Image 1: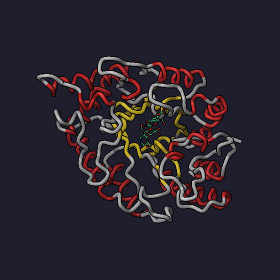
Image 2: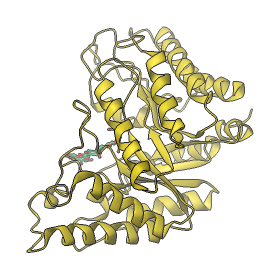
Image 3: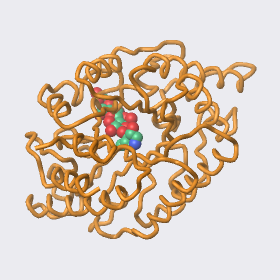
Image 4: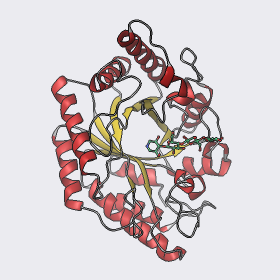
Length: 348
Ligand code: G3I
């Protein structure tokens, strides 16, 4: 049958998946597995680096770049006719920024030094891949998920937070005049994320008011459970509120992308057939809703096989069983989630 990307293309979209995910700067994680790479080639039209294009991977020291791992991934995609999304030119949350950034001395003119460190990064990284990477998560997760305010970061100590983002987007536009420039975040449809959604909409509105060149909102779509200890996990979502959120974003002229799709099954029963069924049904409802927007350009999963999902190490199930959040199981067999994605794409 047709691949997920072929089905997506029939609707004018692309389907893709994350690759890599090992320790920053290495080619470990899923990229090291030939069976997984073959699956990516079979199903995808698009790849994205899990960790290999983050600052922690590309900039081991303030004045040193290391492109080896990222280059190999982009070359692999290119050799196999796959497109690539860049992730990410700026994720300056202190927890994910390179350790050196916290104590870096920006000298007597810190605002100027921050600006040139950031524009140098965007120019070198986006410039290096400008013929291969046409869509970039220019900025990732800049809004505080609890309050909806802008996060304070090593850069925002010297330049107001929104302005830091504007600098990154303007430089990215200069380097990629026709590239898709994306603001990417995880505001979800579950209760408890109202402040996050409101904060992201304020940010998007600010971009428009200031003329910041942002083309799309990346909706990560780590769905399936609120990031809480809820033992049920599923089902308690506000479809109408989510629609209102997406309506406002597209109403401002933004395209949308599902950038990091997976389905957390923490709260579901151990029995595999019923667990996989519940995951697939939940995903189908979400994807049908998202595919009802013509502004949705791509669907990208954060893991093609359960073997390599980032979720395996976090928020463990009470029974400690491996989670089943992706379209293929740990032995690369398709699951009901794969069929649900295919069915949603066919219906679109
Ligand atoms: O592999 C090393 C291991 O050798 C070392 O001992 C250990 C000690 O910290 O670290 C391991 O590296 C970890 C790496 O994942 C590989 O497992 C890093 O610490 C850890 O920070 C890293 O987590 C990644 C996380 O982003 C932070 O960069 C996840 O793989 C990755 O899936 C996750 O992806 C994010 C997106 O970028 C943004 N949206 C949310 C999404 C999920 O959190």
